[in-house]
Length: 300
Image (tube, rainbow, N blue to C red):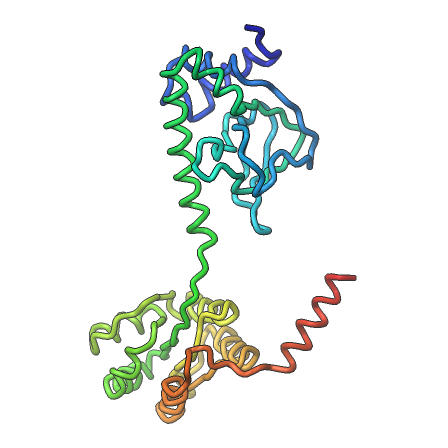
């Protein structure tokens, strides 16, 4: 069989820098390398396209590639790393785009190569299939986790240190009503609520000074908050005052019910309980105009 010009380099990379080195013998790797072919890509060139048939498996021989999906960079792959293992999946389609980060050479192992290998060395062929099926499932699980969209609408429970006892008392008084909602709370507040009331959170974020208020704000912008109960201490200075103010501003931007004391918290709970769904937001004309202006900026 005629070897491609980079055969020796391919064997060297496969045996020293690829995941195959731990699962296959040197002879099996040589057999795999004999079947493959080499192709070069210029910087920025598209190597694979998401959604197209997975007709080949590839390995970076030199250079570097970027794995992209839904405007996210999933990974950068260098010499010895493999992509396109969807060749051996039941779906048989590309799960991401792959682009050359620089001038790159890849080794290509196609479905036709695999069918030939089955005839020549069926044991190695089966071993390759099982190995890459496993790699595919691992990568798919990571991608699914990365792109998982949480559709829950949480009720956020937050309190400054001097107000935590007030929040505990409020939760005890309205336990059944509050427990109807998926709940999120900042660090110590969540632990205290569980200890004092038995209330279980669906999600927890860091304490306010460590970024918890920002985390809840991020959930608001992602449409994951139906209401915020934040018992603030108005008589003390707070090192993260900017975060506190930003959280209130986001509630106004996205029209999220925002309570800062027991009386307004009762009103928020009543409002949320009487709503047909936890998506209780009203439209914000200022937000709509802002989004319209931003879309024009992108178009221009």
